[in-house]
Length: 307
Ligand SMILES: Cc1cc2nc3c(=O)[nH]c(=O)nc-3n(C[C@H](O)[C@H](O)[C@H](O)COP(=O)(O)O)c2cc1C
Image 1: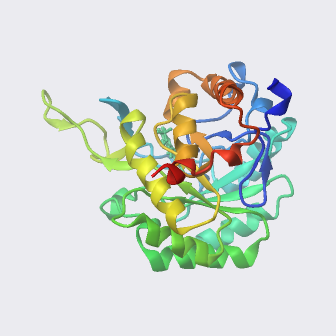
Image 2: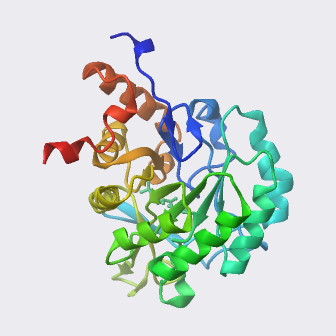
């Protein structure tokens, strides 16, 4: 099979992207174009945006842990007006769809922001970040509650026909119930998932390693948890899943696709190597050539057939 026989394009709920690799919100932005041609990746996903400018949490905001990192950046944001006036126009120079990630403090704020962002013809899809650990609320997030998940998605669904991606939190007992609530609300795609609520302590200062005491664990340490959750969501929902959590190379991305993901997002790995997404695209192509697959769809959820 030659390179041209491999088709990496996938549909993630009404949005077709040229390949299944895209950045995870918060781990991508201006400055990376020095290392990565943005035109190569499936989509651009800038950091979550809030309605008003926000400074983020107190320092230190990140620490390394075994097989990963904990961050408590919070949503550092210049606010939605600057986002619409600067960030959205900036990405128009690239021939790649822009997915806007929205973080809000209430259902009404999700509605209001979605309306403003969906009004921009340059935004291809909305990603609802209902998964950020809300540290003021003992780490609880909108996405920990079925009813609130349904309500947020349902309300935003009334506002726009653009694809709605819902980014779930892994910090729940039963991710299937939350996934189904998002689907009932009208989600087009599910991002599985965000960071795992975590904590690390410096034994010399005897203080927490991040200023906010708790933060979100990301990186290779969380990958098996996320693979399990993708598999579980796939068992109950036919919505396209975007796997996210601990992908460091093409093999990790393929593993998530085999578990049931149609595409993946890459976060922590880009901090280690800002051009890693390019290597992942090439690695997936090489795997498909090696095993004679023509489309990603032949691989999606394939492990279910092997059990
Ligand atoms: C420094 C940092 C900032 C993040 N900011 C956001 C954010 O603004 N919005 C969001 O939905 N997720 C955010 N995340 C979570 C990532 O998008 C991703 O879900 C998580 O890191 C797991 O993927 P990874 O293991 O590949 O990093 C952030 C993660 C990190 C490490």
